[in-house]
Image (cartoon, rainbow, N blue to C red):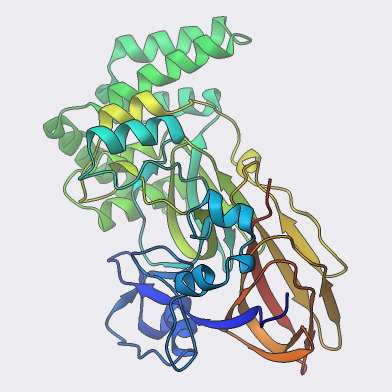
Length: 414
């Protein structure tokens, strides 16, 4: 590649009610590094890095060139194959999330369902694509992810009579007998789990409000150190008025992650982020089917039908990264659109990234240092974002005792 293939970007922020406020938000902290002003009273929820039209990144040059325009001018930055396959866009949207209160319980459709929803309800579902995504914790992070082991769900039905009231004795008894008698029949177990989830999510609002009031009143008088009681009470406080999503946490895994831990959210898997800061990468889509912990439109029927109803432990929801150089880890989900590398350097350390045959975006999440590519040097400061074109070898080193941490999202042609 003869022309420059490394460009510093200004990424845009998104302000949603659930975001952290002002300087408490890593989103706001990173945005300030590219000259954006921050309002201490405003929630800064997401930091978008990519070509998505809702918040496209721009090159920090005199013309403030949109990244998509740059790629259109020089398709080789993306490679011809990726450029053609994704119509000149990047295949992924890279984000930082700063979460003050829970996001909605949701799932993302696969490509077949996404295309059908876009065709039938274009005002709600804005594109025909799927939206697999991956979250890597920057700070201690909480989420709901996938269905709990069936034995835990059975225990919750017994422990929380309010849950049993909503799903009904018949559904509860059928579920219990099925998982006890059909332990090895995964499909029958999934069908029984679907019946429980469907009955819960279709509960009349009047009954949800009544049973949730009973549940929270009872938990208020119990041991506040009980993690489930604390979670139920916290979510009810965040979404008062009888949100069915508060009950859904009794069926879904409560997952906690430390910095560097990750989870991949494939199509048709229920999840909700609860608190913390994370790096997120996803296919460039905005398709979301919601059913709880939200004032937005809920599509309960579609959500109930679309889920896989896989079940397992909270720990099983996490990814295992692979080695990616001396000081880097690779998070490589089973999809084509993206992978993410995390590089962590201590004082005096250096890392080389061999040529990646596709486009990438890099964000510095901690510390500072320098990056070398194509014979030039680029400063790395917390919050700096760079686009790196295809087939560019780079190296990074720390500049002082603070160390250096950066994430790099990329796509390779398939």
